[in-house]
Length: 555
Image 1: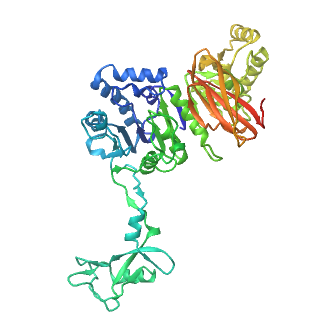
Image 2: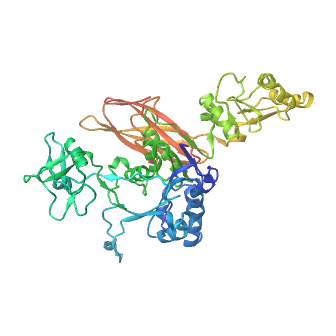
Image 3: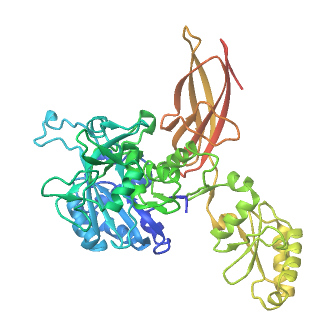
């Protein structure tokens, strides 16, 4: 897992194994016929918008239902789904989708999430109360098997002050609870330190338990000598969370990425922690701004994010890079097209493994002792990969020799002796493959990388720097203006104001449609990195060095 995938989740889900996912959270586009639903503005999002709106509520429910059916299939028996929606279609979604697919018996909660504190609808002429909540339906795949971890929130300061209002000799806050009970239950009518239970009541615990409490220092005596049980504040988990969620909000402005329907990380933290454990797999089939996968990644869950929008996939990729740490697990971004330069010059072993899997083969785990053969097809046909252009005849000669030695019996009986994958093949290689087939009966298949995955050229980027002057403190304002060359058009820009060479790109400005930014710099040297993403999802990075010391110097 740990993949970002560009595509319609319906088609992507069909290629995911059944019962392989622990949690599905989906925040699908709402049924609200509003132009503001088109957020990214790219072709993938527009296509999804049109798909939903071609036939009213019945069509919308049908569109969503076939996708939820696939989500149900990929969920493990211990898994759960959280479906986020609003008032426009929530009743239809519960009755016609979730109850039908998951079964009414597996319904767990209708969570009410208060997304905002105020909404003055009536002040704008609306004849209804302000709409400030969304619905999140929570269903299990199989109720008796489902993973569930109760969640708690901290006690309020007022509650702590009024309830945990006692402090012991060690400075620990506690509350004192009654040790008596209304009904008897065994050894509960004894005298304790000269005290009996109040009239008509019994001790709530046996003498053995009371002795244990006393040995642990957990009994508090009032001025009258009446015993009470201590409950220490630092040992309590907090208030058990119910289905009204009013405090899952953005913690700071820095958390916002400019995506209008972005959900707070606190909301996804609660969902992921309640329904999964570390190492479990979280799926978000309508990824949007990427909050689900960003939180899952931070909480040590595996994850899979899908979206039809190039912008959604790339913004999420940059968001993940921004929170990368030393022990962060790697992830893969799968686009419709791949950049030639990135593939051609990436780590050789990583490329070999990846392209063999894309071709439908199995890569070798070991890098030594394989005679230069890098993998095999399901029928055991050997595969060799050359991360090169214009592969020549000498490679063919070496490959045939390796195939003979690798498996002599198979070589003598095979119909296809081997597959060679490269970026391109020279005339000598093509001629030798033809000669081997015609004269010696040795069949080699030459496959270009572009036959396996579509390849495109990434955009090129130029930056113009304009000095807008300095303030009294020496802070200098700089305007950056971009010029892009791309055959498919620009999707968006991202900016990093303190780029460190060799480290991941950690965007300060995550989603910029203009290509023009202004920023203030203190005196000194600065490395600024700019990324441009085209409509295929391919990107280019330009690093600009500035020296601010009265005069701006570019390099």
